[in-house]
Image 1: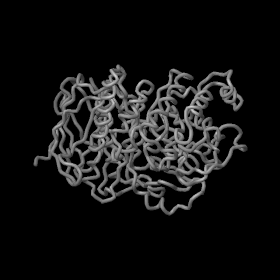
Image 2: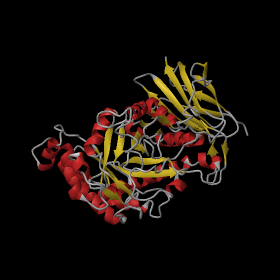
Image 3: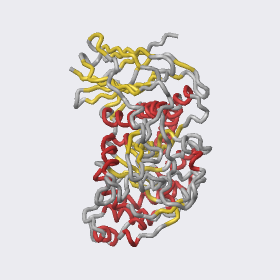
Image 4: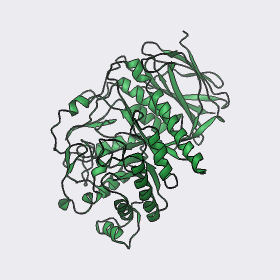
Length: 503
């Protein structure tokens, strides 16, 4: 087998415009995501509202365009009214989703303040587990109406004269899951989501709505769930959601890094199902995809089983990520960019402490996990038009996948900046991969930089005491060989960002 790969990109072979919201994230009232994560009054770097400035800086470094809130499983038993008004009057509630106590010190208004500080927008979820259209019409009136009604005037009385103008809303969360408070059949959820969508758009016709798709591609009702839900909601919603997490419980790294191929198939199946319903409805509207939960999640499962119930903000779902996790996160980002024509929003779940790129110590430091880096690189450099990658690569067979290309890659053309960025993962665990890039339609170019994330230890991770054990460098060897030809060698098990300036 020849260990050599090639990739041709042409400026006219476009996948689609990259919607910046594909680089979104997620904050749920779960574990230390809020309390001890974004919010910790008394911390040396807490601002006047209790938000940690050091965390805000790390979030801003990711250039996160949108953040989903407040859940997640949490939202299916959440009364949003508990989180508004004077903090001292708010009720403590049992959160059945995660078996904790929710103190409601942070709610809708505080989260919107945090969004403004983080330079991001909100993707708000409504409770369709224990509640329905009535609650949804109230929260959107409170959030988006200027004034002159009960709920909008109440917001003004709470100190927020201008409406929040939240434009993206999720119609519940994972309603197919038996673990969900108020879970439903596809027909039950479809009817509720349809009626909820109607009243929400009657209040504010400018909003966009996301219907719940399957909780994962392994659900027994997938993809019938999507077909049934869209039968009911097609006329009223704009997106269908996808959720998927991966792990390496079997300690099979070659198979682990191939799992993004399953994500490719998941995306393809949901697009096919949405297009089938469009055809069946004889509709003109394309339903796009919101991959609003995705990540690696498995490291913390055992520790979570030992947490005592009914505490406040225990350390739940605190995966400590290693180098190979960052590689798969890079592959997952590439999977979504390869369907940027239809995947228009996505949320890395989650943002701080809970299966997150950012970790904190209560009262102490905040630091970057390994997965921070591919997420940051894609968000910062992956804006523009995704281009079809014509790839030739040697392949391997893994336990669950066959014909896995060692090279996983995509290119993004930022016409405004006259730049092309290639994101590439070498999945080979032992050998470097020579790569020939052909930008034949772009003419002359030069290499701005070749960023590499690599480590000899696939299990190496960043901790509070060793925060830079895994971090990228700019010593990659990509170089122009002739006109629009670029040669590079991708190190074994590496994430690469090759940035090119068009001249």
